[in-house]
Image (cartoon, rainbow, N blue to C red; front, top):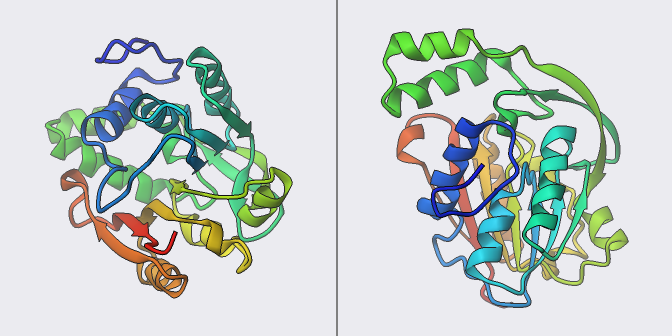
Length: 252
């Protein structure tokens, strides 16, 4: 499809892609609270989906290098196609990141791919989607009709690695921005960074699902490693457990 700014993009669900465009390109959700990028910086994208964030960063700051991780096959293939289509300097890997290595069961939502994850809860995801739709202007009846028409999720077995493993095997010598959007696995992703690799990380942006105190745990982990941390909520997700977190280290 063609994005509103005229950019062509390979994608799966037009409605989902439009929402990603709003958040990433229009609202510029990743460039808040002191997050900056410069040519030559290295961006690690965990939960890259079809690559909308890569495309945005590539457009606003040419010369970036990317390492992108996406475990679901369909979004991954779109990600690879978008990297090629826009000549983005990226290493792409079809796997999930966590605090351990091996295999895991991924719940995949074909009509809402960005909600797929290792810790799926169908009732919770449906309630969240309903809230989002109604706050976006849908009536209660229309929101229920849309949810009723959704395809059932499927379970996919995917490879799992730690971020420290990826840093070592892909020889990532610096991480100027670590972007994490992994649907409830964000704490595990950050715990998968060994102490020896934290000094390479300069900035972090993450969508955090605050379950069992995970927002406080992630904030404490980042502060322990020298980051200044801020968090806020999208107006359409106010009073839910989803927060956007921004962390910057001033010593790098």
